[in-house]
Length: 88
Image 1 (tube, rainbow, N blue to C red):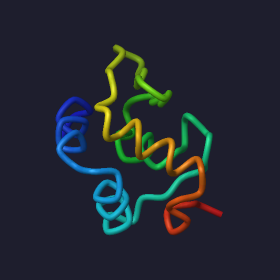
Image 2: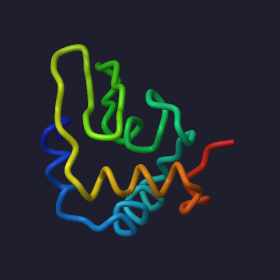
Image 3: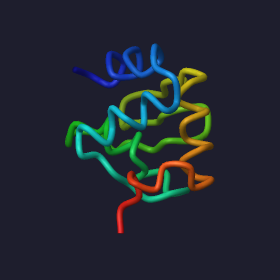
């Protein structure tokens, strides 16, 4: 799947469902670290420099808008709500 397709899938999930999907996929990341948060790690296919903000994702090629549910997940992750997804 490309980034646009992955964002579409995430857009259908609630924040806790996004957390569950990432956990089952073994994806972790660092809070408040735009290039290595769980969403950036999920979206990065190894060919793009992915930077995740609170409302957008910027790659080498373009900017994507984050679905509201993904924005909410990011806020909750950065606030410590999903400790199993924190990379140490």
